[in-house]
Length: 401
Image (cartoon, rainbow, N blue to C red; front, side, top):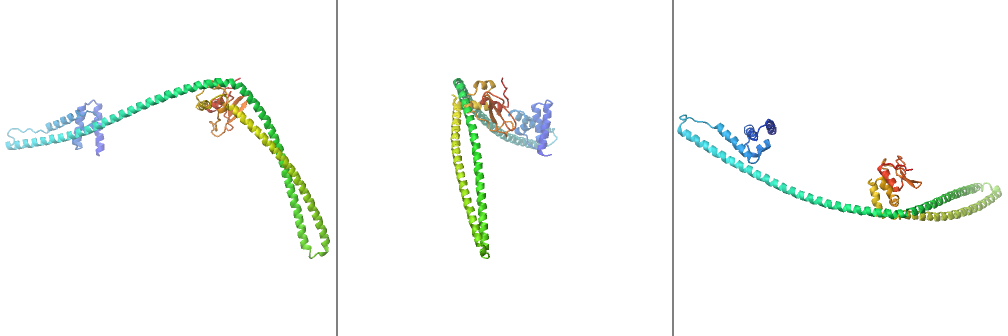
């Protein structure tokens, strides 16, 4: 059994004695016996304290002295009168006295070492105590600063709530007129969109016709050019051996030249048709650009009107952040209405499937946000802000009558 196992055995014995009700002095004496007789270690305060886990710096040295006193008492030999010579008895006494003095010196040395070790431990404990006090003061200062920042934040929240209430009051006054203007602009935008689609269809038909004319022209040109090339090649092959047929070949050449002139004339006519179609297409493109500019202007006007609803952008951003955090109730969203809809940003991904891109629809001036992938919907809401809040919180809006 090694030293560590033996120490653990001694600790188990001391735990058993402590459980049976042994006192501190009995535990210390047992530890001294096992250290001195079994381990061959001189009992010290640190070694005894490590095994017993009890006793103070003044009690353990007393227990160790008591152990040595018992050892000396047990090893003392009584010599009867006349048993040994007087000189030998005096010599034995001197030897025992020298051994006792040497034991006292060793005990004082051990005591000084243990006192130095205790002083070192005491110094370290004091230093740890000071460090703990410094950390405690720093923690208290940090708590005070946190409380001050929290008070400042609450003051800011109350001020923002006051501003929000004022902005809501001002926004309700312009809400009806703004909604009528938005409806009128949306109707005009729908009419222009229909006209634009019609012009797009006409333009596409003309482009198809121009492409067909180009194809016909290219095919006719290639066909006549190939015929001329074949005739010239055939004439060149037969010119020497067939001089008799020179006149007929000249007539054929004249016929081919007439066909080339006809092809050139048809090509010129096709070019004129293409030029006319291109001019018409340019006019339609110009009209299309003008109408696109009008649509863009109307779109910008709609965006400007939606953005200018009498609400501070900072307050609108605060409302949007509160909605994303899920801190506004349904009653509060209905109280806010569509005041901040011009500043609402739609979520880029569905919170349920994390793949679909949500789409916003408007039916009878009510808004619904729906994911095309998983059909996750917010239900019909009175405002875009309410639809986004319900969509993010996965709490569908109750359809009102």
